[in-house]
Every structure is written in C-alpha cells, then in structure tokens.
Amino acid sequence: MAQTQDQSESNPPLESSVATVCEGWSTPLTLHNNYWLRSHTVSKFMLVRDNFKPRRDDIILATQPKCGTTWLKALAFTITGRGRLSFSDHPLRTDNSHNLVPFIGVQDTGGDLEHLETLPSPRLLSTHLPLSLLPPTISTVGCKVVYLCREPKDAFVSRWHFENKIITGGAPPISLDDAFGMFCQGRSPFGPFWDHYLEYWKESLARPHEVMFLRYEEMVSNPLKVVRELACFLGAPFTQEEETSGVAQQIERFCSFDSLRNLDINKTGGTDSAGGKISLQASALFRKGKVGDWVNHMTKDMGETMDRLVDHKFKGSGLEF
Image (cartoon, rainbow, N blue to C red):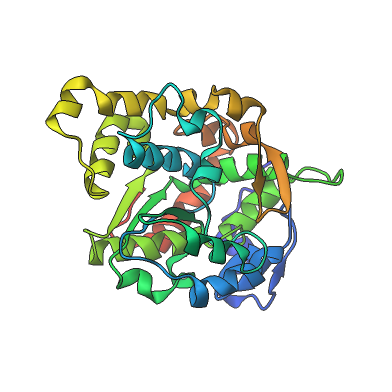
C-alpha cells in the first residue's frame, strides 16, 4: 500500500519542477508565487494582496487547511462575542463557524472584498493564505493574527480524507500513496505546508504581541489554557467575575470538538468549500480530531519519510514537531 522509499528522493523537489498545474486532488491546483492554490480560486486570491484593506482592530485567523480551522473560528467567535451572546441561542447552534467568520477572498471575484469593507469593526476574519499572499500592511497596521498549525502527519491524513469527501462527478477516490507523494512534494492546497508554517512562525517571533502561534495539539491537551491565552491575546481577558462564574469553562465545553460536531447544524447543515465551487455537508468538517490518528492509516515507513522531511524543512527554525 505505502511507498517505502524516501519521498524526497523518489519525487523531485518542488523547486526543481517546471509544472505550474497539478492534477490529482479533488480539483486541479495552480502554482502561484510558490504556493499551490485551487486553480479556480487563483484569480480571486490574486486580488487579496492588492485590494484587501486590513484594519488596526481586525482579528485574522490563519491556518493551513485541516489544522483545526473550524474549531479555532468557533473559539474566537465565542470569546470575542461573550457578554452579548447567550449559549442557549448562540449563533453556532444555527450556523457553521465558516459562515460566521468569513474567509478573505473566496467568493465571486472581488465581491467578498467589497462586502468585507461593509462589516463593522472589529472584524473577525479568516484565511488559508500564506502571509506572503496577504497585503504587506498586515505586518504594519497593528491587527491581530492567530495562526494554528498541526502535526504534519495528522494534517495530511485529515487532508486525504477530506479531499475524498468532496470529489464530485463519480471520480475515483484519491489513493493514500498518491496523496502522500503530492503532499511531501508540497503539492497540496495552500502548500507547501512547511513554507506556510514557517512564514507565520517567523512573524510570530518578530511580533509576538500581534501574531499568536498555536498548535492543534495544545488545544487538544489543554483546551482551557488555550481559551484563556487566546482571550488575553485578543485583548479580552476574562474578568475575575467571569472566572468565578466559570465562563472560560463554559466556552471551552461549548466549543469543544465533540460539542460542535454534535450540534444539529453540523450534522445536517451544508457549507461551501474550495471557494464556493463545491458544496458539502457540514459534517464533512468533523472527522475524529484525534492527535496521532495517522498511525491508523500510514505505514511506519511513510511516517519516517514525513519525519525526515519535516526535520529537514524546519531545521534551525526553532519550530519542532
């Protein structure tokens, strides 16, 4: 089933490839400024760098796909909206967090950027784009950026499962081997994942008060700690009264992976993926959410290949997995 030789040797590195289109995932990818984007989204995302206008009080949630985006959006939305939103009729009960926290640049060309301009401040927004494809003013205007990454092997397995859920037109499923080869070459949506991680990691080191770097594994192991840290970073720390009344614990429980997955809206509702081109059930956004689930899908050789790749790509950065 698995490839046993080192992918970095069996496949040419991204930098040496002259191809600008990649087939194999649920939709074709196009190489744009060293990142692979879904081909039908490239023209939309090209507008973002020059036309999106970040504001000083914006909060931007940034992730590689399948790294806990839905969960992070729910947490940030609930933390910043507490006091004016009750848990009994909370918007997350009737709408998916992807609709409540809009993506930057994924709707009809230019349309959503114009819509974002009409939103009142402070805006809570999200993106899968690497930092280098966002406006340079992101780094100077003073807005907050929260970046969430995930251990690459688990992120890959989640990506593979998700891609097979959104394949349309009766196409055959993507094999694990094929997906693994493309992922290790950096040829995956918004990949290479290592460059994506490193751009935000380095920015968080340079501007720790404006860029928060989170790990999915931290959210799983100590979610209450992350809730409190996120609230502080967003400028909305819990008051002593809130701590006494258990507000942080309520948010942590309400926004837990299992709680979100079991909401009726996320069992039966729908959402858009891949820039509005693909509609899917919201339930497709929730699989297991488990740390270390890769061992149930990848062979030992595949795991070791990925680990060698990660060690090489992140060497000297201070970012470790």
